[in-house]
Length: 378
Image (cartoon, rainbow, N blue to C red; front, side, top):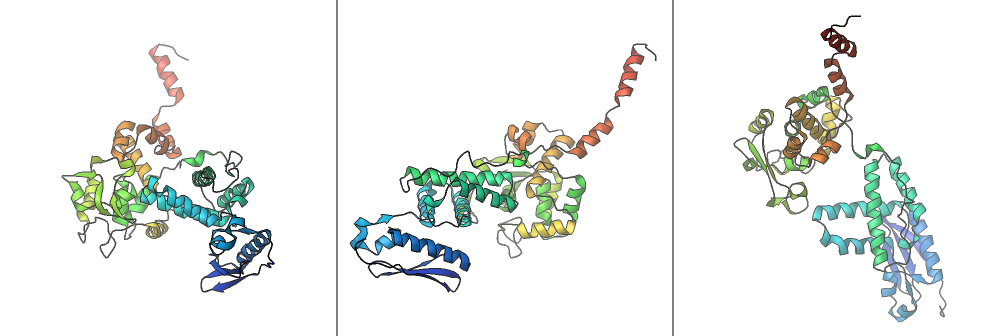
């Protein structure tokens, strides 16, 4: 630029986060939150910004403060602005819950990269991020989901010409191929027994999940009027309040009406009617999550490798093995397709294999029986 300019940048802690302070060529001061509590990271952002100011690279906020120089400035899209533009532009394509989940995941992912601008990120950065997430014990399925979220974001900003770069998310960003993308875990009868008899605030809810195979959201949105004459009607509720807004519907919007087993009906009948919800909090308000209570219950029952979805797996197994439901019948009851039933809800159980083997006559006995029928003796 033709005018003398010496960038002056500094950082300071203001209550919760570090702030970046610097002066533009026209003397206007800029203050912006770096949204980090770490001094080292704040200084990293400061040095990066200082270098850009030396090179005459300015972000959107800088340009707004320098209308007299705007025609000569190069605007660079920072990550936070890029993420906001993407989320705002794509929000109408998703329901509110999906949008909030994407918002939380994407902002968390880009924050872990420690970069300021979108075009700074390359394939190596994405691979390092995946490795970092793996070290945090994220599942292979979660890694695949996160990679997909990043890929959609970068393709969107590129297609809308907000940046000039190639997508850093490609086939080069490998995730170890594993059979664990689908959880292959069937709880034992002993584990189920320990869970359903342990004293807990959520014990009735857990028992109900065990003997209905319901999704957690279906049970948490269960109201007294939904069950009539032993049948539970699971359907869209336009006026039902949810964690995010108003209006609840079952997964994929698929309604179903199922007859309840005596064990599930017993739980329902014993529940105190303190509000419209069958399984509310102590104050009668609708329960949104059982994360902490579930962890406490597992500790008390001394059962640790267990997820809420595993209760659904167990009930599917219970229907098919004890009540001789076909996969099609079990999938209709649980609310998914027969293919999903076989691939997601029918895990291999060594315990079940051993039980079946004990009921099968040995090969020697079978051979002797066949030979005796033919009059052959050894």
